[in-house]
Image 1: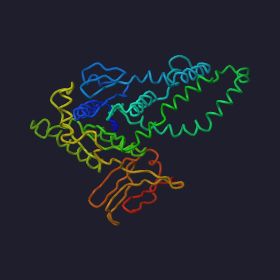
Image 2: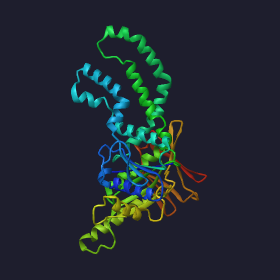
Image 3: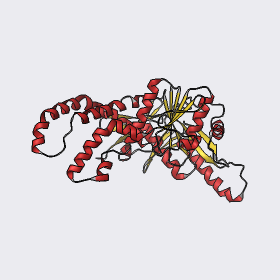
Image 4: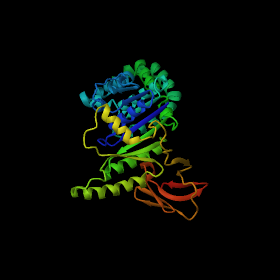
Length: 389
């Protein structure tokens, strides 16, 4: 079983890459599902066939689906949302504002990802390709089951029993709406839906993320930041795909400067994604929609490679706790003492090993800390971050 998450900034062509990867996978004989968790679905535009919440066959061996995240949200969060809306209404906040505050940002996509777990457990497909929303922030929410597990095991049964006893008394003392068994059952369903997602998506043998970007400065910066966050939360990125690259065969003087700028950006990608499989996809002279054109995109993108395989290790680093400090551990095999240099520049950590340089965008949790130590231990660079006194 393989799960491939395709993500990137909005408008970079991730849906095209997702659809082309899916067709390529099906053509190789894998039972394939491509599904969209993006609330602004565009898979059906890419395939030029109508799609719905249930998987539909596009070509032989390939099913496609546009998950109805609102329906998933209603199934698992409806009672809790209604209860929160009642509380906001009781406090004086009414209408649309109350309804909006009763649903946390990213929850609709989170429940969509829960459907991926169901597909994996069904064993109906060999490969599942996920066209994610234009941000990787939702992946950060996948740590929620770990946080909720303590509450569900320790506090949830107690609070449910206490509420059952205290509800008759509290209802006489206050008019504030109180949670009933239906609300607690909805929370339990919510947790059950999330349980197991992270175990699937954080297992590099099963799941890989692929970052799609254009050769533009802001887009590359966003992709690097996403790469860092995915690594921080334990998700493997096995490929960085640069889409809409101007062919070098262009001779029109108008594009000369654009080609020069693009080359600088491509070098930045090579530097920022060291150790990750990097693929380039040219800017086509027509809109690549429909099965035939998407098949051409897949052929050019992967060549003779199997798109379902793990294209590279994709783990840039890991983070360990050490008392009051945090240690960032990065593999630097064969590096020798004296040829490794570490420098902090604003929100970047710049690591130089011999003639190779790597720039890593620091996540917020490390950006607030200072580098206090850097050590080379058995092929690993260990950089210690601590809060200032």
